[in-house]
Amino acid sequence: MAQFDVDGFVATEQVTGSDEGITEVRARVTLNQDGSMSQSSRYLKQGKWVDGHSVTYYPVE
Image 1 (cartoon, rainbow, N blue to C red):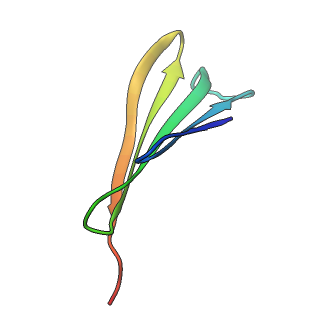
Image 2 (image 1 turned 135 degrees about the vertical axis):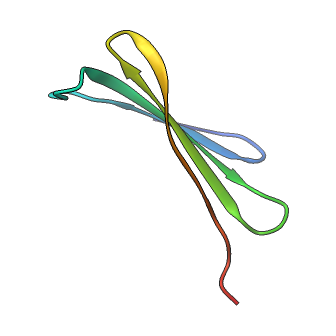
């Protein structure tokens, strides 16, 4: 599922079969004013939300 807003979107994914106990992932993607795109994620792991990874992509000229 994805929910869009002015700056980007939030995607939610249900997970099954994770050995680490992850049952849901949420990723936030933001389109930034400078033309870059930022993405960060959080995981629902054993009933608690934990930070995942984050990255910023920049346009190549």
